[in-house]
Image (cartoon, rainbow, N blue to C red; front, side):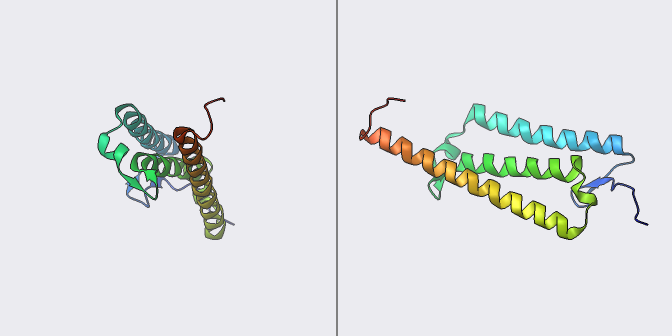
Length: 128
């Protein structure tokens, strides 16, 4: 029979907890910190991150995309107990979702940028 105990560690064993309840609080605190960083960047909008671009996308947007993927990964990993599944299932679920989320974000950003450029250049009036 399999061992039905849950792993009480996060960050590949860097933080270890004594019970499931303290582990849930630890993951909640981590996800809260990531969310606070996202909200703070959205409010402050540093000029360095707003002016510079990588692959025609502002750096702040890349930061939001990466932090969102990190949050989605940890929600699936800890709250949906993906860490207790066989390694093949972990990889198939995680890699597929990361690819699809990154692809969707890329498409939305490129298409949104195109629509903005068309409207900004004046080829089509703002009639939404």
